[in-house]
Structure formats: C-alpha cells, structure tokens
Image 1 (tube, helix red, strand yellow):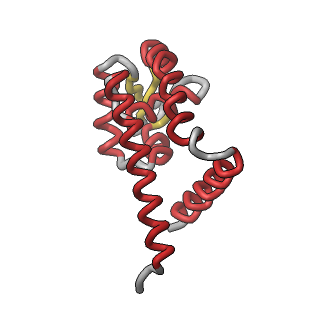
Image 2 (cartoon, rainbow, N blue to C red):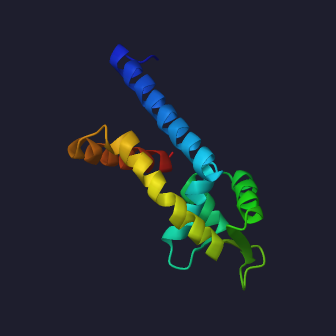
Length: 148
C-alpha cells in the first residue's frame, strides 16, 4: 500500500510544518525562559484550571505523554520551584501536580511573549478561515487517534 503523490506531499508538509513550529517554540522558550516547550505546556495546563492542580494521570493523558516522561518533567519543574507534587487525600497512589505561586508568576511573565510567538508563527500565516479549518482538522485527527 502506498500514498499518492498528493497524499505524500501533504504528509511531508504536515510533518515539516509541525517540526518547524515545534523547533521555533522550543528555541524561544529555552532562550527566553529556560524551559522546554513540553514543560511550558505542563505549566500552561495547570494554569488553566482554577486551583492549578491536576492528577498526574489526567495531566499525562492531556499531554499525550507517558507517565515516566511527565514525571521527569514535573521533577525538573519542581526543582525550579514552579510546581509541587501533592498526595491525593484519600487515594494513596494518587498524586497531583500543583502550580506554585512562583509557577503562576513565571507563567504570567512568559506567556505574553509565548503567545506573541504563536501569533507570529501560526496565526500570522493563516487567515481566520484557514485557522478555523486547522482547528476543525486538528479536532478530527485527535478524535480519530483517540479511538485508535
């Protein structure tokens, strides 16, 4: 089974665009804040929930990340004072990742520049209609892969 020329070109374009966006964001965050893109995503997801707290398993699922990789990144962020782990009050196996006050201040400080980079890198290239299509296609891919 093979791909048509158009399918192959589309696939390579998708891979290339993803790689370049990821490299751009990784470089920006490393140079401006000393964190990786994956670490920023952990902070951002914690920052979006009211109490800044998520169960490690739920966070791993949201990030599509194996628990061991998430554990490593949370350990690094904890070492920077940006997150802490907390034991679940009734489930001895349950752990939370919790955004600290320092982590929230860090996120507040670096997010404007990060979001400006997103605007420039992705939103500055696509029209509003194209971005809406990108969102719809991304949602469709995520739903399809979630069922795999």
